Image 1: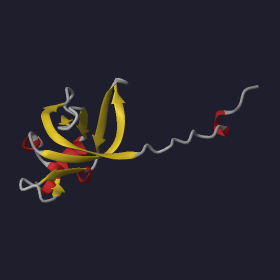
Image 2 (image 1 turned 90 degrees about the vertical axis):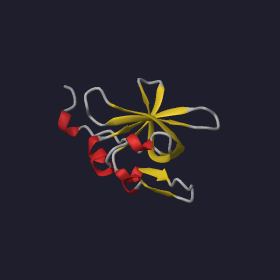
Image 3 (image 1 turned 45 degrees about the horizontal axis):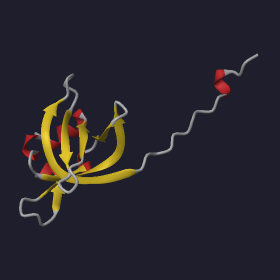
Length: 113
């Protein structure tokens, strides 16, 4: 007979490494089903782009993301690929997003910007 389901050990999932991505925030928009927001970070040096999804819980702690457009931001998190192609990053806590001050002295948390 086959193995009992109760004897199987759960697979261990290795934690994904986290990265900090810096660039200019562009194209803040709503997710189709209304669950959060999405914006694009554009790297000025090489023109690369990465999509950032902000969860509804994180959004509640940050307020409106419309003020981010055109500002330099730093996002920290694990990179994953949307549809297996487009690099993306998810924000689940407001502390994962920092907005650079307009005078460019140092970043501040998104909730204070």
